[in-house]
Length: 445
Image (tube, rainbow, N blue to C red):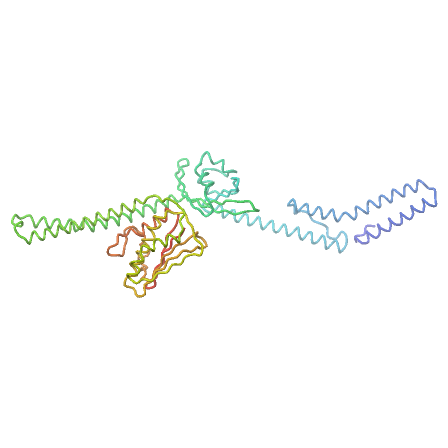
């Protein structure tokens, strides 16, 4: 008889064990059948061992199930009809847990394949390393850039690309660096950016690498073309009237008697004055160009941004009072300190405030506002705003172009100079303007 119900099995084994125990006690007390007594004792021991093994089978099944999970083995299944309803429910739930793990594992494998396909498809090089330099991810784009198959550690790249390894070790989260590499016959200009994260409390660094050589060459060519057009325009505007006026004066003085006519001499003098003035204008233009190209490298110091604004505003208080311009300072409760060159940043603020004052001249209720704030993506943002006439939308994209100006007496290098200084500080200058509402310039660090 082999009952399937666990309770029946347990009752039968218990009854057999109890009956055998009573039989053994009877033979020991009332008979002298020593051999039968010995055999009965062995039978009782066998039944007891079987009873214990039978009781431990469920524990062995559970232990085997947990060990299978521990070793990611989800092939173990249990027969649900072996021991009655209670164990049928238990083994049914264990089998369902196994099937659920199998589904999760399959979904994870699909997600991994999906992400792996995306990582390999993008033409941006991706590299993930842990704090010890072990390479956890290196996609095909980066392998193509470096002419290297997948590597296990950064140190294996030191011989072929030492500057690349140095950049990866030094770059900080949120930082971007430009790196030039010469690998084999290829010359690369790489834009390297980094972010950091933790997996199970272990720091990891994810690096994105993009070859921007062609984009830089295109932008450089466009910049040169734009600069040449501007220079040509300015020089032709100066040279053309000078050449024309010189020819006119030469014709006026060709005749000998022309020197005896006061009217002719006066015209010649006026013409020479005009030539001198235009030549000085051209000289001033070339001097401005030279100044734009010769900005000294920044000397980085700790700069209190609130003190920077106070010092700059002090320079303009007399002019603000003269033109009855109201001003407002929006300073943070706690000082915001940045690493910068205070003199160069002061020059930027001076240019921005001068532009704001020029825009406010003749405006009703003129107001100037300056302030400092933090944003979600910047350490500090300094802004200068006015309620002037605003900048026409059609010229907004040109205001940072060297020598472009809407002022009759402007040189057109102020905002270009500001952008260049901010780039030296790894920062950014931006502008928002709405006609008849006002303009705001923002310096972001």
